[in-house]
Length: 258
Ligand code: SAM
Image (cartoon, rainbow, N blue to C red):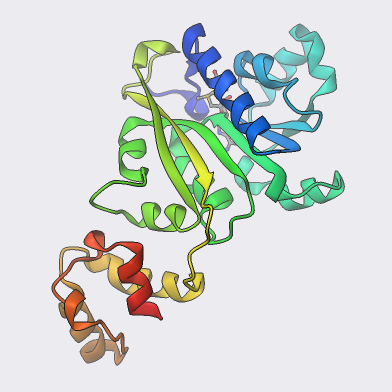
């Protein structure tokens, strides 16, 4: 079923508690000082997590839900509510205003599925490892494609997994929401890599931009074509020329870009 702003509210209390407990555990174990929730909706997850952090704020685009909450939810007056499109919010400036930093910040939410990719890219796909990590409800199909150990890697996989490991936590059936979405969902955790990759992200992005559009061809064939058509030179080691982009591991990427 199509919903306004991806509003499928999580009504299954067991899953809500599982999610709330997970967020608290990760927040505490990672020594976070800030918690951000994207899309609190009807405040049902917010109710479970708003006391985890003394510095908690939420970003919600739908003013009706905010107004409704203000009428019905007494503890909401203690929560900083940013009424905006999450993609437009300058989160770094918001953190600076609070004398806080991204590297102590955990980002969570039952995401609006129509903008899952841009949200993940905004917080975790820039090659920096600023944020501690995140816990998110996403479409199962997206979760399956993002997890660290997948065989075939998409563009989003590469840029998110550059700085973060993506861990599949739990499958969530459509009936856990109201209204029920058309798709099955899943919970994922994004965990900052313990040791950052020693690969330059800008150079990696330009490699991806050149090679990802031809993901069915081998690296050798793409390199030859790029040289011929655009006079662009990528030195692909002989052992990797027969591989496709999606088959590479980080070690292979390092070898190409070093
Ligand atoms: N957290 C609630 C829950 O678990 O039931 C609601 C989750 S619902 C899937 C997604 C929420 O994101 C909705 O409240 C929706 O209004 C909000 N939302 C949609 N687009 C948004 C955007 N661009 N920026 C911020 N919030 C957005």
